[in-house]
Image 1 (cartoon, rainbow, N blue to C red):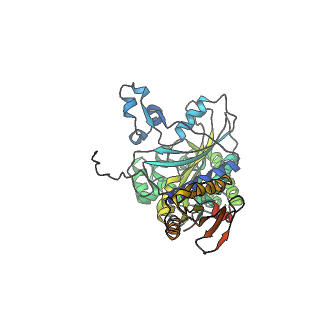
Image 2 (spheres, rainbow, N blue to C red; image 1 turned 30 degrees about the horizontal axis):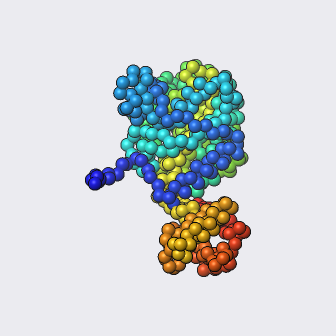
Image 3 (cartoon, rainbow, N blue to C red; image 1 turned 90 degrees about the horizontal axis):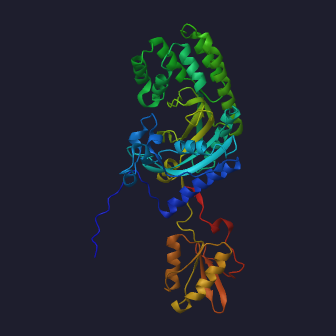
Length: 450
């Protein structure tokens, strides 16, 4: 006999019960439905990539789970790791298949990723992520920056969560403003402003000072970050701030880029709100610290659950592939992050914990074959059915169905199919397995508000 060691919990690796898994599957199904309604095709990429490609020139290397067995004797360039997002494998996919895909390439991807960060509520080491991107060859129309935001807004609106607000900004606008007020290290300033919610204005001002940003420029940067509007009112606020700020010599060369960024942000807010009223908010605090974003940037929050942080983010980039020539725009959703909150907060639940709509009772073990035949006739017509595990008294078989949330119990008859009982209402009728159907809402387990 093998002695089993005590099982220790592993934080950061979520496991769902059958009822919770139904909720997760519903979320994935709704995302897939909306993405496909808008013409996005699904791809799946391998789980591993070369570590050198995953880490690039970022700090991501410390979050990568490497594969010890495969890497033990591998050269540095051949070492493999589990992907920690879906962008790196997608970039490799496009690079390898650039002669085969049709551009602009509209793709969505829903897969697990692995990230070696400190687990906490809503942050896992293994989790599902859902991405949509549109990638062009050499050029990408600006209207797609609006379209992907609309698609994602509609997808999030289909989920069993409160309303989502999509906070949007434009990197061209922000960078032009920063340069105009005299900020030379724009990337460093963006990274600092991206921490605003965590370290506050004082913390950002301190970091900007350490980067050599003057006090007047720092004040202007923070004033810009404070502008927020659910309509185009932000345009006047930005122009007023520009006119009253202390501008650096040569600021005129940045005015064109500033105007272009304002126009793009105006189109984004107006376009999203026309499609999904009240969803988009122009928020000049949103910076997205990653340097490759060059146009629209997005972060989405669930109303009443702001403590969860951003549940969806992304932006416009000039090139998906390091060599250039593949501009695109995309958004990513933390699926497991959302599902964890839906379950923990009771926002939604499944109507039952099992797929079965019908339990066929067993009169006696010798007659189990008759019960199995009835079950197969129901299954052949798409009705999820299981057969009672034992031939206990009917009352106990009904209790078994009730505990599992199965709404109907079928009692085989002598020489006939028998009768079926709705154990919720107590209604019992003579039925034929070739024609009887449960109400449409009972055929499958459904996800309903909690």
